Image 1 (cartoon, helix red, strand yellow):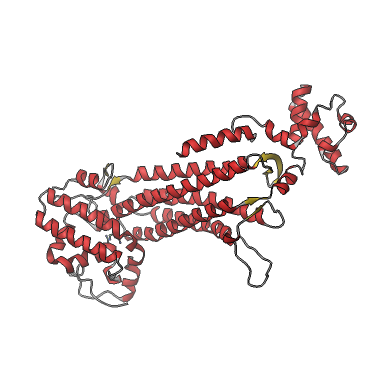
Image 2 (tube, protein in one colour):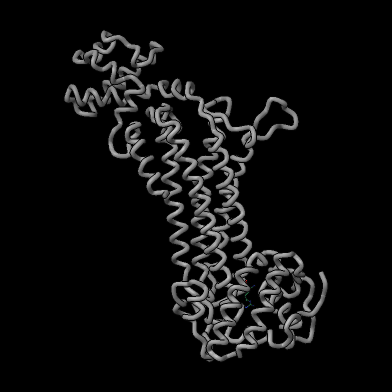
Length: 462
Ligand code: ARG
């Protein structure tokens, strides 16, 4: 790394920085992604300075045209980022100086990098959240389509990963839909809470210049200026909110990913994943592996760690700004990259997922998944207490298991050994399909309920 002097900020120093200092202090590699927002914020600031007569119109015009040139240079990848200039803010300011001369120095009047970086981050996160929300919308639509296709497909529902009760596969997928509804809400709340403008808080105390923070707020589409200059530069709650919303979303994606891995295993064989989302083995020619789903599962761990890192960076930080805060960018960009790709991967896998309906139905009728139905019937038709019905049913299940039979294949005589009041009315109740159709309580698994849920979801998504 070169030992070039940072000419803008080093006039108080007699020595050049050691390379190792530059190495730890620079953030350009992980904050240059803020270039758009840095320029957007600077233009708004320059406009305000001119409006408040802190700079002249001519100076403002010169500054803004210089900033626009820099934007094009960065977009065309002609801009040279210099680590010794620390961060995106100083890199842009330095280039502005090269392009328009000393008037560039006026841009930083009544501003500090401390309020500048928070402003940039908030602007960037707003856009990133919009992007995540639109990707989640597409995922939600994909799930609805998959659910709709499989409303009448019967599968086993599990608790403790033991067969519990038969359910509609459509109902099952709609459970994931609900999670992503909450995720969208969390992201939207994060966006609306962060939308206060920190620009003008300056280093931490505000300024004696007659700035107008309402003008920059309006120009940058913030709801209002932040209330307290100290809090403005030291607050990273919005980063934690974003990392949290992303972690929860990644956790949901990881749960689906886990099911995809299990379901597509030849041991379980509940579904097939399209070849275009599988990879092979370097040694075993027969293999088709769900690598993408496995990576989504792992990425949830990375995102949780990012959230934990940010909370730990913040937890003992004295007010107001400290350089520790610079490390937030690494966490944000890593989380952003990983949440986008995780959403996209799960969407793609679900789009191509084919359910093995025969296997699902077969598994649904294994494991005495209709036993609860027998107990419920004893309550409804015999007026037994549920506890009594539970005990009789447990004994019948034991008997059936010993005789290697399903409940529906026992004879009436078999049933009567356990309770003489049982009649042949029980048999249709035990039919697996009927069991599923009987769960008509609001939010239950009956296909009729699932159709309603899907209809509601479609309406919500528009
Ligand atoms: N790169 C820094 C950050 O991301 C900019 C903030 C101000 N730096 C400073 N020395 N006060 O936090």
